[in-house]
Image (cartoon, rainbow, N blue to C red; front, side):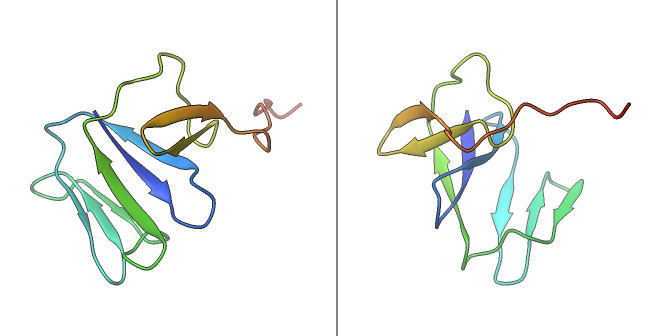
Length: 84
């Protein structure tokens, strides 16, 4: 597995399979080959790709921090709710 981490907070934004191509460029990030997804708010100045990570099992976008090979719960994460 691999994760894309926000540089200033260590928040894991994406958890992706090893075979998913990830290209973090100066203006955006693409996922897939050929590109299937364009992520406009991730680029080389604010995100880092970390490879060879282990899936924590209950990963959801934003609910984990990834620092030096260790997953920890994100204390700022709020469980999403459905609109009323």
